[in-house]
Length: 142
Image 1 (cartoon, rainbow, N blue to C red):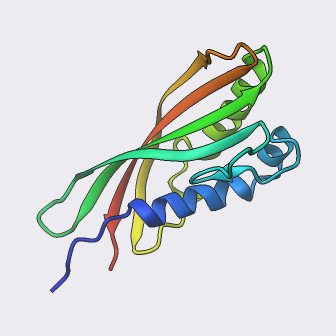
Image 2: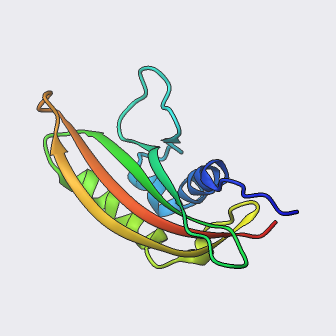
């Protein structure tokens, strides 16, 4: 009997690995692999947090699937949106409509789509917060 397994943890691991493995993105992060589930206390800017998610069933008659929305947070310390937008643009290039970009253990990525990109001003005028959300549809393989 096949049981439904959540793709959330392996999807998050695949996202972190994909982002850390891109030299152009790492250059935008000041040469650091600053991509985290939870950044260390006092982490230097800029950095990316692969964070919040929402996972809902997307099953059919013969298989288990999920639709997972994943939110990525980009944090920069500069009085301009440009550095964060450059990072966001590179992430979209890497992931949007690129289902083969991610290897998700126990699941196949059917599709991945960018849903939105939002730039926010933090109460500290030196800090910018950019939010990206992707919808990832998976099918369980084992």
